Image 1: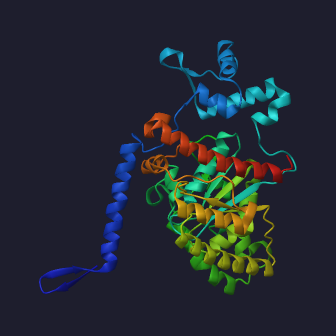
Image 2: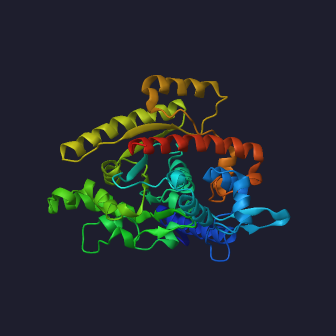
Image 3: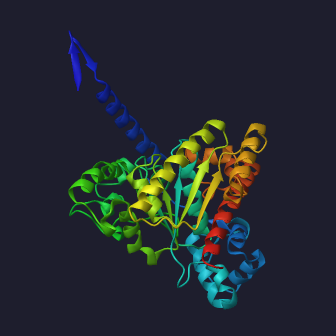
Length: 402
């Protein structure tokens, strides 16, 4: 809509923002098509036999002998006889090793066993730039590489996690195709199993997000007044009920929360068995986290008073974008450890151009070839990411009593 002054059309603020959104959206779609031709679909690279040996925890020589004996999946062979495996083949290899070496089978496939509850890990913070989505992405991919069945759930209307998995929210996600479709209040509510999408990353399924998620924030107050809901119909229980519908299909759910403490976040807090709070070690971020924790504690109290259960098995603070050579940052990390003790993960995710450069093409370090961003930078960054995610995986196993 434009206003007319004399012979000149003056563009209104809303129409200008709308035009800019359309321009940017179209450009992003063009870029996506350019990066991932011909159908703008992402695919995961293959892994060298050395990488596979590290992932599966056997020797490279053992893998070579399996290949020579015609056992297990058949790897692709490149120049110089170099062998490579897809992630699907890595999981085939795990299945073979579990049957061939049954005493060690649980190490090859760490999936939850009978009696072990589904792990629901919420990644939260309302401060922008704390690497919340990056943390959720890398944790999901690390766990999938380790052999877990992962459901990544995008609760953020900005849908950055969905974009990282190759779905552009405004084009690829239609109406009623987000978690909102499974927790809405009317007769268009759908089973979560119909909303879950596969991803190019074997072992990870996705519940995508887009701006439709804001509908839950808008409709919940009205539903609370009109319906006077009880039991499982209470707004903060709806997400947990939806997840429970598909619990048998997964070992862990990783939830990327929106950057605000609204009804969706309250649902995530109630559904979660564990919470990760990301924190960039800068004073302004620490001050923001103080407000976040105060508000979160108030929300938790509201949920508990309404009959909700918040029995989190662990709550941990994840230091992200950390420069270990920066003295002020080191002081802040020391402060956090002094205040929160073992609730702060020992490992930190280092600030890295390798991680940033990977993100420019909507990829993670797990998806990139080692030499594409500089081997030294790649190795240092991946080592820090793996250390953080390994700590979280060990906490999961401890909950399971392993």
